[in-house]
View 1 (cartoon, rainbow, N blue to C red):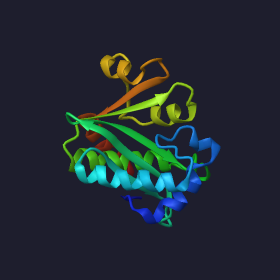
View 2: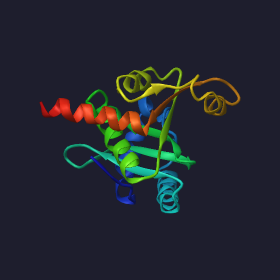
View 3: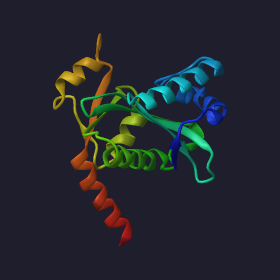
View 4: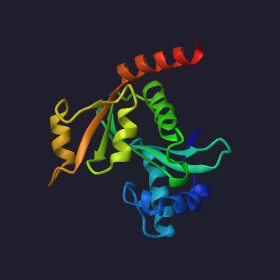
Length: 179
């Protein structure tokens, strides 16, 4: 479901990203394919340097349908950014991608807390993230982080996932799926 980024999937991802239902909410919304290629190359280099972790989300057929990234990694924390192409909305890919990515982050990397900043008007993303049992609302808990992502105006809500909470929750999810 997830794989390391490479340049071969850029055309398919760019075509999905430019859909108006997606484009506004993508962290790296590039106006041209060449710029998207350049940004992807940068992300690959940043991952080698340890400042981000970036994966391509694949469907069951192995086709790229979106991306998921952890960026601004510092002090065992980072920010999560996810987007999925419009044809794949509402099919459970978001939750599965987040669970797989968070499992990688918490089990294979020294990450303790993952922040998610979601635009207040992005109702689809807010509803999707609030369904996940390990995601908590963080505007008041991490007030300094909340203030920092809302400069100069308050347009984001802050959510977070802590390692311990995720691992406890994912054990419960695996148990439910086994029974």
